[in-house]
Image (cartoon, rainbow, N blue to C red):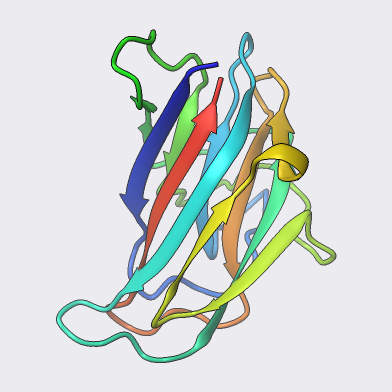
Length: 167
């Protein structure tokens, strides 16, 4: 299987409110979407916080995950970068970011598919290998969505993110 990755940054002062699939995309970080012909396995997710020119305000942050059944309206779609230059291009739809109006259709209420908390002055590196394997089947609406729950990010703070997957 080929491995791909993509990095991005969220808007600043991201809300801690769950998205509403038929309306605003509050707190939405990203959605990694399969394609009609190819699924994927999420292998790693790394998150951190940057605060402009100052030290990040120390606070606990929680990221929640859900499986999506419809893609939503993204502001940007980021194709996977090949980790091995000898492989073919990524076949999945890609990493959707910058949702502004319609969030992917998913269950945005607890209990979440998965959630992780960390301090804004550190970071979190989540490997999903072996028993922790997350598989997303081929299908245009299939994907994994992650969003900020709990505390909103302060002004000038943003998430830095790196997704890694296998196809």
